[in-house]
Image 1 (cartoon, rainbow, N blue to C red):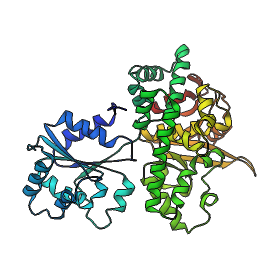
Image 2 (cartoon, rainbow, N blue to C red; image 1 turned 90 degrees about the vertical axis):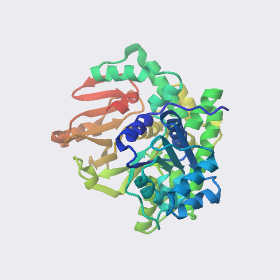
Image 3 (cartoon, helix red, strand yellow; image 1 turned 135 degrees about the horizontal axis):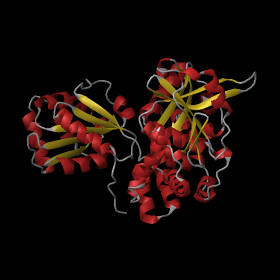
Image 4 (cartoon, one colour; image 1 turned 135 degrees about the vertical axis):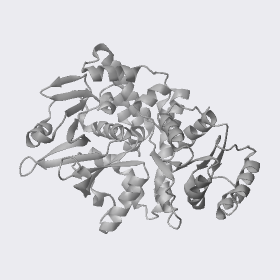
Length: 444
């Protein structure tokens, strides 16, 4: 299988950093493993610099790592790097990449002095959870910008398939408030394929090479195992790994929060918080906190004891949902391919919407409030826009009933800018509510 270099939106952010920082600040790209950080950074280096050195701290020799133990002679370090990698570095025309920088904490600490030296540009990549675990005893450089990177979004996925037209066209219809009409069914089918394959570059690569979803599923299983093993390394009890693997099952219960104790039993409060932070820092998991006061500044009133967990890539989520079954028994694949996903599998769409909202820079919040003594209303997602909020309800079908949204709109009418129902049918707008096909989520 030939490894493909996919077009990624983060490339433009790298260009902006290069021109604005002008060597005065390094760049740290943080995100989950296997999302393509190293690939896009090396592609950027090839295109935008006269020369570059990529130091992969997962596999470099101890002699290279040890260069950063003593920074008294930077000239010696640069000469050693050029000799070891057979690359000539040119002042202000070369880039040095610290790949998987968490494996060499002293290299991370050295960034301060390397940037002050000013000869070259520096980009670091790493998983935030590993970076934190390995930087407890070093000085974190302040001369560093950070960018979060995620799996390929829906538009990047379409680019990989050779389609550069669909999303700009969808955006035009969204801006004009028009339904797509006859094109809607095709775009919905494209979205379902994205849900099945996901945005992990290795899985997309496998799909393009084989057009075989069983082989794609095998790739995704290997990635999920990698993540589960990573959690075992930071928590040998296995409890954090269990929390991760249980996310699809928890969402499928259609309850108002992730029930921590049902997965691993009771632990001390600070231990739960620690595991939750590790899950969030891994960038493999997105967290939606309950907003106790649904208003602007929801972070100030979030309840950290009430939350929902989502997998950062819905392709991985689909695989995890039927982890103990063979690919041929995974009914989500069958149902999505034939557009017959029942309501009890609607949590797949909820995870997808969470993924799409996070990819466009939104923090995730949700809200529940009493309907009567035994029942609650729930708003799936709340996002801020200016000095107002936007409630979002997710439907896995074309059904337009939204009792919770109606109650919320009545209760908080003065706080709301726009209200959305995300569903599987075409664009509509009725009673100040926008009914959007899920593929328009990133345009909200």
